[in-house]
Image (cartoon, rainbow, N blue to C red; front, side, top):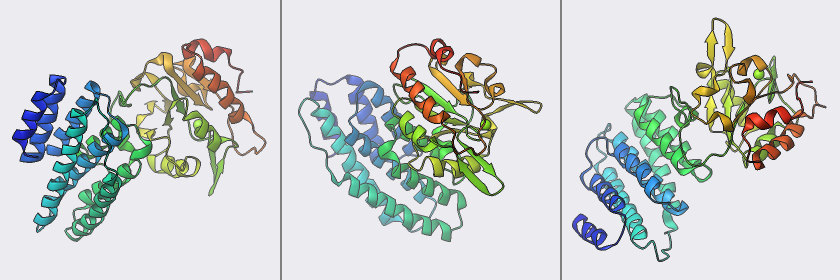
Length: 352
Ligand SMILES: [Mg+2]
């Protein structure tokens, strides 16, 4: 659909004028392809989602277009890919037209085009080709970006929409390494992005709380896997560890194989006063009435003691049941509507 027709169509509808103008601007981005278009498109998608509730299928369309634009920007660094670029442009335009049609027909039901999954698979395949090209041209950073983009797309079905967009935005703006997870959080405080209604945030320590590493042996505390699996339905889950990102990802791959915990704050986010470490919950960007931290060291949360649950240090006891007990207590907290500071003192002590 040409841009002019689109504008006329949109004007005829009694839509929120801000939605109309934003959709028009997005259409223009796809028509003109000026520099920084991927980032601009994502910014508009974020803004639109604050104006208009977006259904899951349409979220995939936004993510597919944004990813295509990122691919397109990365393709600019390699020669002889005109045909490839044109096909991406064409795809993005037709996807955007579907978004517009569905927005125009918001009162009627419009069936999403299920070929979107096939299309996303195509984007992922395009990325594989591009990685080959980029490797040949020795642009390491672009190769990393393509690999991270692939992982973000693979996880999109179980990631809140705005969190996926945050990750895409960070991917464009930052030169991060091949690790995906730093893309979901901010480099400086407040660390956690806003991506929807979060009732409670559960911050978890890793070593001696959920796992223990002894020499080359990596041990899982009884109930750790089930704990994450259950708690993800009640809480926004965050790992806050003094360990390195590489170690945290290694450990979480084992105890959280489905990546329910995408928000991972590692060593560089832990505050150090000389050699004295602490985890400052005020830097998370969350209402402290809604934040709980579980850590085997009370010193780690000494600046927000009312938010903390100190769980006994675990170094391998296979009879330990504390995570099972804690899970059932935390479920009660989650379904209560009280501030956590009022609830935590009522919980049985886990540190004895
Ligand atoms: Mg610990």
